[in-house]
Image 1 (cartoon, rainbow, N blue to C red):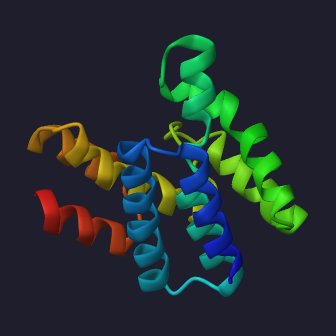
Image 2: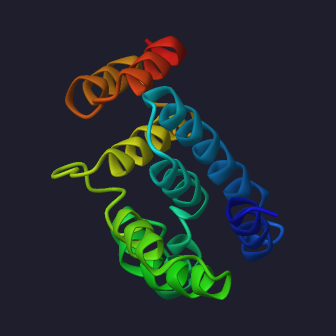
Length: 162
């Protein structure tokens, strides 16, 4: 079983019967995996993007318990420590954990996106959230113009919504 498969199993167990959250992270994982592959990233970045796609919202569970809110700032605040604990238990490389936790701790922050992996997670998450949140075509266009940078992410968003 690959590390990605182990993380997938762990995340399904973590969210238990919360099918909505499981479906969300599976969709983000799928789009992130595809965008990364189409962008031709190296093997490390591909694995980083896939694991981060699965774990990006791990902080929601704790945020809802602590703050009764799933707001992005709370996800970013609570997610890295929870991800680190899970990923260390699965014996994920320390550098990979550090990179994953950085993205988790910033994935709702759309300024200063400083790596391709971070960009891909932001784009994949937005593609899913646009549908799940029922965003207007105008709102999607604004994000497309301001935030989307990868050719693959732009093509995907445009093909689905614009």
